[in-house]
Image 1 (cartoon, rainbow, N blue to C red):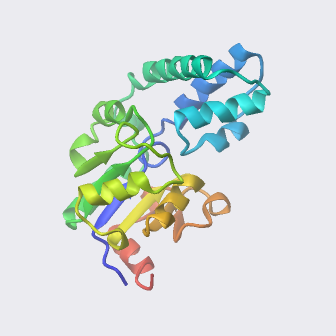
Image 2: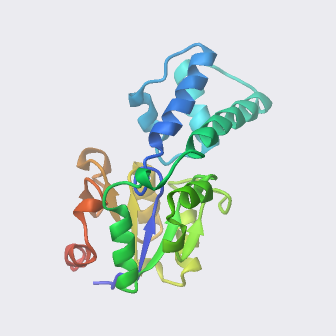
Image 3: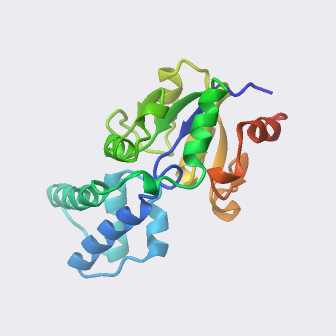
Length: 220
């Protein structure tokens, strides 16, 4: 058993509920382009970068665009998303998330963010979560999107903890795969049907504690 010395968290869908704002902004863009974008379609965008998400959206709509137009649309979507998250507050922290972050610190476990979001600091500041992190690695620090392990390896490096002592908390398949590629253990937040590759799956952070995590990973 490798001792747990750091916990690395994805942001959207793990700590805060911003996924619906992403969906609304993408759906509005799709409507302007003349096609429907469903919640089922939106599942494909979880844990994926903005540019890659736009490519998936355009693929769903059967639309081909040049790079300049794609950049404009990605910026348009982000501007709408930023308008939504600017109104966020601590009420949008997901159940159990704040308590678990506090518990990690009480057990002297390092806490880092590993998110593809380039708006992570806005969200953390608006919800009051910023002080609970020892390191914050977001989309402004990375060049490769999940499932590339870059974001988690940078997080481990930032808190000076070896990957084998890190546990990643993710709600997306791409994030779980990134954790595995980084040589880290993982906890899927959500459904075992979609996150079965994780070492442990729970519905939310409300269903986990540091002691339960250590017990579950005792043999891993």
